[in-house]
Image 1: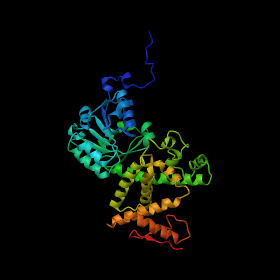
Image 2: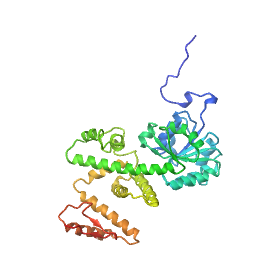
Image 3: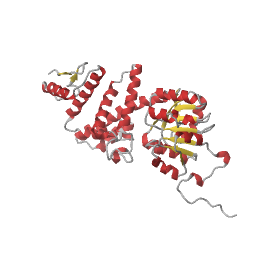
Image 4: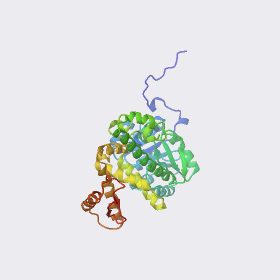
Length: 389
């Protein structure tokens, strides 16, 4: 008998390998095609899903539509195309306000969503937003899960993300798991709706500190003449080993394929890390959890953003520190000013940064010790207290 012919192209095309009708996977929608959403959606398409996508910028969907996805003009159109039993819609958005608009707006998902649809939000927002969307979805007969992710853009591209899932339903979590495993590792159920976000905020709080400590360590090593490659070799097999060093190193030239290798473009922006820190600190304040290190880190990332790194990956905190080489006092004084401004705002008082700067200079001049974060003291009223000799 004549041998069967096989497709000769090595490029992927879902249409090149049609499935029998009984094996066709349920359709899926994806809304929000940024640095994370685009590769996540691409992996669903590669898995053979019928994919319908939406983004405020239609141009970003071009790689997906070229591979067989359909672009919808609104969230409601996405819902009309894929929802119902077995169908799902994933969202990856930048804020709680955006989540509420996409789900409950005039052309939102819930305006056209059929019952028994899985609605999964992967955004990092307030846990309260997730609970609000869950209630709204339940009123339409749909299941809502919060499923923020960890792993960054590299994890999204390689389908190795960690999903932290909050779900009120065992059945909904089970139904969503096949989608999760096509974009990442087996998901972790953290509890009821909102628990996934609570875990994500705790994780990113730790990540912000981890990256900051890694950047400071490499900056210190470089200042002492240590080859960064040697320091990385040691740290990555020693007690300082961490994701920020061995997988996402912030020093240019240490690793390929990470934001530091491309001038900190295309990663997790400093502005987004600031947003996550704000959410984490708000959550901490609500439950009375002390987070002094995270509060300090937020001021440093804020200062970095103000000095031109807001749109760059948060690992650019290393470049920010390197730019201050030789003048560490500038960072210490700026941090003291940030603390004093926050204290004055909390007390309902006005803040004069010019007068404050003069107070700091005068306070520092009263001691022969170098000006550091420990030698410039701020009182509870936001006033500078001259350090003791």
